Image (cartoon, rainbow, N blue to C red; front, side):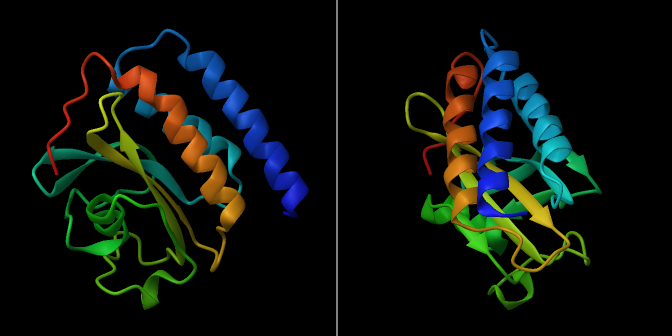
Length: 165
């Protein structure tokens, strides 16, 4: 997929998410819908979903599409933990070269993880998209998945629980 096709795909995806999430103020509903849309739209995604902050420095699998994910991830392990701990999007071309990588899916080769914040600024989850293809994700994926995260923020206002981490 070339850059123009990828931008077009994400522009359509953002429009669809904006439409279906309009007026939704339930974090689980929003995350489940987002995971389904991303998994269905991104052809190179083998897994798309969320890990929710459930305790200080602890993530637990949330709504997702794809094979079984890791159930719990501490902030000091893996790509998801790094995104939560550093509060920065992680784009990893080769997960096997990432220090502390957790192999939830042995076939996974690359990954992008974006922190998700509630409107008050607290970290509530990370958005995780994996691929069986090496180096599947780039700066276009980062840019648009960060926009997806921003699209979710209004949906988290009433029932998201943000731990001060």
